[in-house]
Length: 453
Image (cartoon, rainbow, N blue to C red; front, side, top):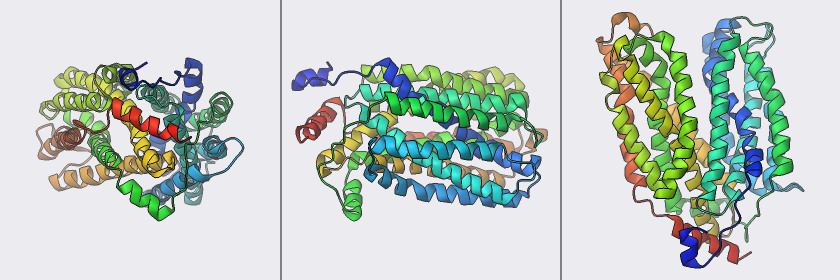
């Protein structure tokens, strides 16, 4: 029993067994393997290996991203309203999994003669299937547990498997190579594994993980629901901090390869450092859970962002191959802190949904996580939209390694990589340090919700 429950006299719900947590977390692995290749490897493969025009590939992927953004709120609304014998979370999840699995294979293993129409159609199908799978999956996890810290366990298991899937998505394509369009190149192998693993793991999840109870007492109209969402101040505060922190993470993620090559002069370190970063993030997840129990979820996340700012501060001053070990140390620290960024905000999101459910009478986790997903995508898009124009103005180009670390364009790269994100993180810290929803308040909300069942 937690301290908050002891004070209130309300028992905690029983903890989820590890077997249930494992069954829930398994689909996160193949789902994670879809995101990095889609944004990083697919454009290069279709333009360089298949020989499609770069402008056409860019336009096709722009259409996919626009469709992806527009479909998020719609599928979030559907996720909360869809009927089905399996339950609303398991029903939409079960419909989305086969679409995502098939589309991933077709996109990652195209025939050598595939053109822009193939890229566009498969990209749109993958976007639809991925969103229809991910939104009910995330909402399902938020509703599996009502306890303040138990929700962090659920998020931690899911995000831990997400990081393992990301590591596979980094390693496999490069291990097999993808310089040829035919045969089992790296992207094709990854697509086949996703196509096999996602339905298999998804079936385990549907069979072994219970459908969470729906605490909806009344249905809100679309307009009334939006008004109530806008009045959910903890959510607005959280999603603003999450967006700013996502922007702060997205800018260095976008510039990482350029920084290692042009500023440090270590292009051969790019792959190993990227792998090290995500490997450390896996180790950071249990640290995040422990820190949240020692203080609170929002304060632990804020402290992690403070440490990240301190770690990033010297990064722009590093230059040349001799700075490689120091940058590797920064990679380890920020990788560990990525575990906090993944596990804690998603758990807090489940808490702010309780504010809406308790006041409005409708449990709308699907819509909330759809908006959460949209904020993630906007942060990544804005990170690219800010970083590249600034570097272009400063005169940086991808071949700047030959100019040396003292070149003005390379200096601009270093500042954009290390110091611009700190400003965004500091604003996110200010929003979260005194966040108004702690363990005791969350337990009060849960009693209000369950008292009306």
